[in-house]
Image (cartoon, rainbow, N blue to C red; front, top):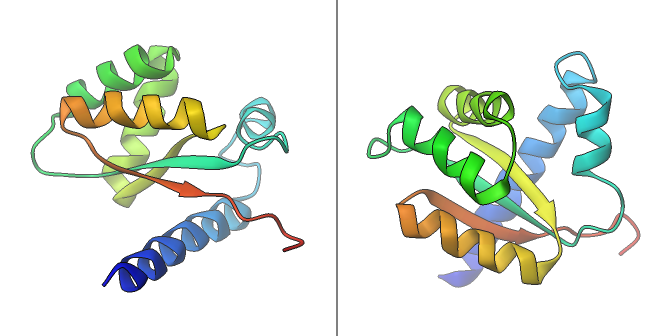
Length: 120
């Protein structure tokens, strides 16, 4: 069962990364790309859309947990709402676990996945 869940999560992450590459830099500012993938990240947090949390709750949670601007949080929340899922953060495992705990405490549907280097 866990193998199936792991395979599904890996497929979702790959799909999201392909979508980001296909969209190019047109919809994403260059500075945010540098912030997302600087080369030192090992894990990523992905948030999924749900029918429980309001858009306002998600925006406020992202601002509070990640200390990002309200505009950035709105953009991420709209992506979660419109596409059903979005990568909201990448970084080291010890930070990721704390962020994940804070997101889940509010009731957001999210998960943590490891970034696999290209040369594995």
